[in-house]
Structures are given as C-alpha cells and as structure tokens.
Length: 374
Image 1 (cartoon, rainbow, N blue to C red):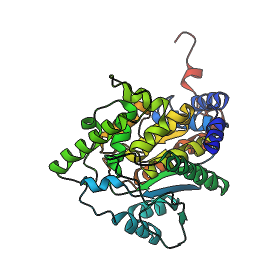
Image 2 (cartoon, rainbow, N blue to C red):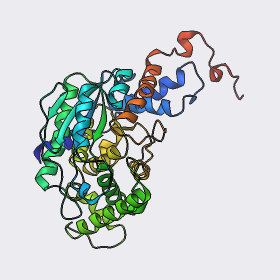
Image 3 (cartoon, rainbow, N blue to C red):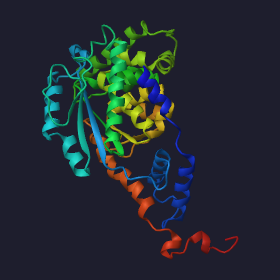
Image 4 (cartoon, rainbow, N blue to C red):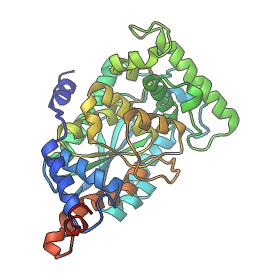
C-alpha cells in the first residue's frame, strides 16, 4: 500500500490563485463575458490543475489502453468470445483500431498496458507487459481479485501515469479493453452510487434483451454475494455506497476488473503529478469512482471526455459531479470518446494564450465604455 498511500498524499487542491487569474483574464478578452460557456470554466480549471495562467497546452497527450479479461464472462453476459480481448490488443499495436485512428487525428500517443489479459502476449513496441493475473475470477462465485491483485493493479496504473508524465506528456487519457468489462463496471457503479443494478447495467457491445436481463441478474448476484464478505455491511438502504466509500479497494477486489484498478491508479497518478486526465466512458467512470473514494481531491483533475450510451456512465458522472464535453452516444471504449474531446480541451487553453485583451487590441469594453449608472 505504500505507493498508493504516497500517491494519495501527493494530491493537492487546485491552485486558487491561478484560477482567479484565469477568470480575470477571461473577463478582459475580446469577447462577451461568459460567451464561451463551459470552455471558459474548463480553461479556468486547467489553470488550477497546472498552477499557472495561462495553463500549458494539453500536448503531447497519451492514451493508455489498459487491457484485461474477466471471469464473469463465463456467466454468458456477452456473445463475444473472450479471445477478442487479446486479438484487439494486437489490433491496437498494429494501429488498426478506432482508438489508433482518432489518436493519429489529434496527435496523441497510444500505449497498451497488459494488466490482465488471459494468456501470454508477445513483446511488441507500444505494449507494456504489466500482467497482474490472467484475468479476474468469476465475481458471482467469489471475489474477482485478491486484495493483493487489486493493490498491484492500482500500482500499475500509478506507475504508467508517472512514466508518461516523466516522458513529457502533459495530458493523459484513459482507454480500456476487456470483453465483459461493462458487467464489472455496472457492479462497481451500483456499489459506489447505491443505484440498483437495473439502473446502471447497459447493453455493452450490443447484446439482445434476453442477454441484458441475464446481465442485470449477474450484477445483482455478484453484489449480493459481495455484501456477505464486506466488513461493515449491515444490509440497510444506502449501505453499499457507505461501505464502498469506506473500503474502496475491498469493493474493487470483490466486483471490479484489473483494468478498472489500473485506471483508478492512473487517475491518482495523474492527479499527483498535476496533469489533467481525460476519462473515456463507463469503464473509466467506474474506475474514477474508486480513485475518488481513495482520494477525493483526484476528482478535480478529471475531465469527462464524453457521455457514453451506457446508463451506468450517467450515474457515475453524476456521482463524480463531472459534465461531459461530448455526447455522441458512443459505447466503444478504447479511449475513443476521450480522444474526441481533446481538441475542445486544447481550444479552452488556446483561448487563454492567444486571444487578445480589450486593451491590447484597442477594442472598447462595453463595461468600460458605459456611462456611470447605465
């Protein structure tokens, strides 16, 4: 736990002085005050993240695709064979996936992290071999991970963030790959938000109604089993969320995935290094709930790249208090939604760097030009 504890301790609040300077600068730029809406608030928060105004551009950026398999696949929650996880990792490394296309478009680097893919993967450029286990266990029959596996997977994410920042990256984006990982995501989100499995379990990669009904029951069964093993669970209304907040790593080990754990660590590592982390979809949302339970201050360093079509994602974002930058009803994962949001983040920063003030441009400010009392 030492690395996790050290990382959590290194997370500091947003810099209020830098945010104040960004607000003041926005008020002097050649545009009506508040006319850029959410982009203005985004630029102000990024100044608080960096501790300087204007904040540095979010470049170079890197998306880390954390890949892992899930034992709950055995419960028939998806028609996709488990082998697709490893096959898609090869596709990422060959540059042939959607995440690669979007990353090329915005100039981001793609790193694939094997934190728990079932079976061995050959060494390849762009692949970080950090396997903690050959996938998780079936969470309906027992804990998905041991406490040690959950801890180590979180550390993998922390280390990945540290190394990417050390390599010069100034914006980190979450990606994921793992057949059946939306099932584990739904279980985590239900546990951390107190929402019912029916409310947070979606159709994932396009399952039919019968499979979706089974998926909901699988999530419900996993949570029911986990309650018997979580300390302090008294079975009352709201107990899931209280226990999750008090013992996030224990809940993660019970019903999470290795990639969820690694993404949670990735968020913590980004926050500790004062670099913004752009969350992708429902898997990242579930992982961010774990990270914020471990370190509430990590929330301020998270940007919601998009709003997924998965219902659990809306619940996670609401709990985190994050507003998504893009809503295209995506449900692919991989980091695709986070990458699509990156130009908006860059634009929010570019405004603070490049737009002239009323004074410098010789443009009359309506407030300065108005007569007293007008």
